[in-house]
Length: 76
Image 1 (cartoon, rainbow, N blue to C red):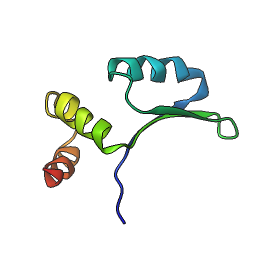
Image 2: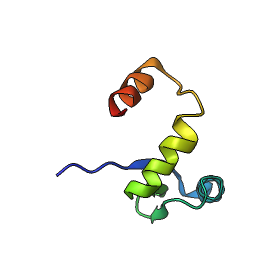
Image 3: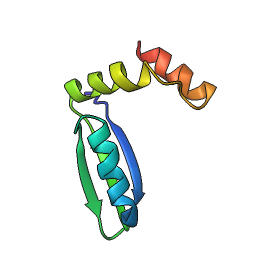
Image 4: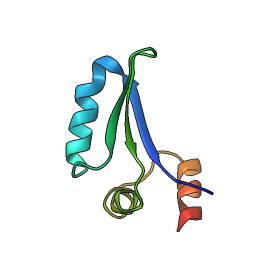
């Protein structure tokens, strides 16, 4: 079985930034806290949320590197 997900991980002090990003992404995903690693992660993993992210973010804003673009084009 193969599953897809999208994660953003930041230091725990930057959790408010993850919350801001989550709001901007139409409240998609869930924020997880990892106190032992001093990290917080925004995880987007449901098919409907991933589809929304692809249609509303990745299709409208350019990716940073050619490698990212190549990997993204393989999904379409």
